[in-house]
Every structure is written in structure tokens, then in C-alpha cells.
Length: 70
Image 1: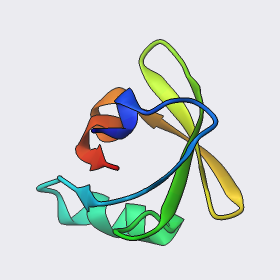
Image 2: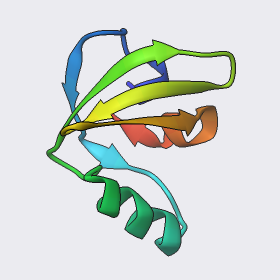
Image 3: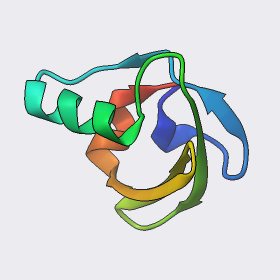
Image 4: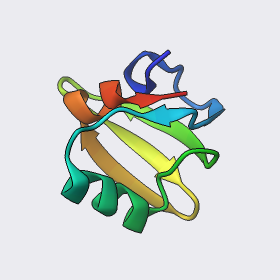
């Protein structure tokens, strides 16, 4: 399932990140978002969602949330 489909408040392990953009991959890595890391959806908004990775919270858009498989 994708992060966009994930249930709020539940922790998941990132299984795969499907992007074709090396800069985006590097950006996600700098946030601590990589395969094997724990991630949780704090809340879903209209076209984005707030996620918790390690000790930080980030707002990511729907397209990116759909590229992250948990």
C-alpha cells in the first residue's frame, strides 16, 4: 500500500520509494525517509499529508505520498 492510503496514527516501515528523480531521492534521504525506516501519517489533508519521520514532521504532497510504499 502507499503512504497516501495509510491509516493515521499508525507506524509503518518504508518498503520502497518509486521516484525517477535523483534530486527527490536525495531530498527524501536528507529527511531520513528511506527503505527500512519507520514512518507514520499524522494527518491527511486535501492534497497532502503530514508525516512523522524520526523526530521531525513534514508536509508532503499527494503525488509523493503515493510514491512511498509501506
